[in-house]
Length: 255
Image 1 (tube, rainbow, N blue to C red):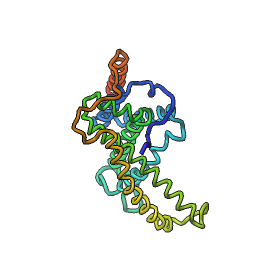
Image 2 (image 1 turned 180 degrees about the horizontal axis):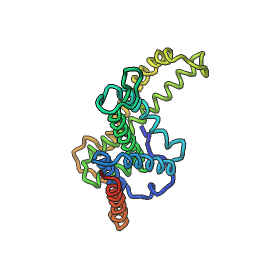
Image 3 (image 1 turned 135 degrees about the horizontal axis):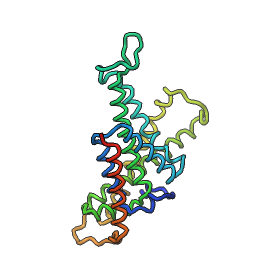
Image 4 (image 1 turned 180 degrees about the vertical axis):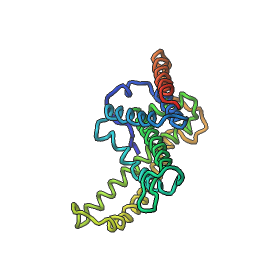
């Protein structure tokens, strides 16, 4: 249960105060839903990818794209059924595959989805979970809600890692290990893996309960704080820098 999304890397994002990063994250996530030019949102996507490459390296930087690719593919499949009016861009026979309006809408949804994904993941990649908990507490979020959020971001990667280990162990037991498997058989073979992962998750409930108990969850006495974030001059500088970057971005790309 100690799985952490934090990745030890390099770059200015690691030195930025976590409270300033959270402010910048919220402002950018709000901005992508405001009236903005598409080039601005896609620029934010490219900038986030560039920062990810600088912070965690090439191999890890593109992993969020692989995660969201199935969702983007489903969105792309429904393009022919949305926004039928407008100029036709792709036509096969008498069937209109995509109109100009549908392509613009897909670009808007895809850019927003990728931008928010990278912004959130960059925050968790460059900030330890203990610091995130202290940051949420500094902003006034109650201890229980902060604990639920941090445990969720520990438990979900923990289950994902366990699922990967179980699928690898099942694959090594098969006689066709290392060979190409037909897609139909691959879908059929995933059921034992899902069942084992579900059983593993149920067995981990006592560990989760013990983790909550060790953190004082459910106690009525006054809770002490082992670590708290200090308020100093650098905090004002970092927060001002985050706000200035967001304001400049809005001035340049708002429509």
